[in-house]
Length: 92
Image (cartoon, rainbow, N blue to C red):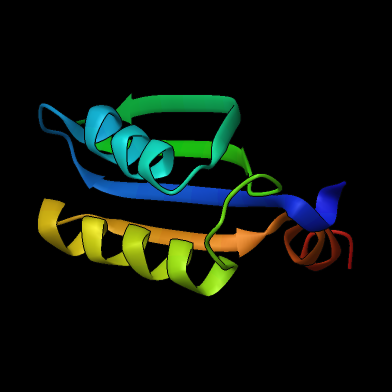
């Protein structure tokens, strides 16, 4: 199952609408949000999301590109990784 899960990391200056915009893109691309954590540190917004792309009709590359473009529109950094790769990177 983790081969169908993705980790989305959002980081940047806090502003209204970040969660809404990112969630809307995920919904449009058929990505199910399985978990979400966010925090605000001295005006800096950080959010981690666990998504599942199993039922999406879009490829991982298309989803990643859409989220990257959304980050640019928001003036935020958005990184997207497959969960299995993310797990291996953090178990070294």
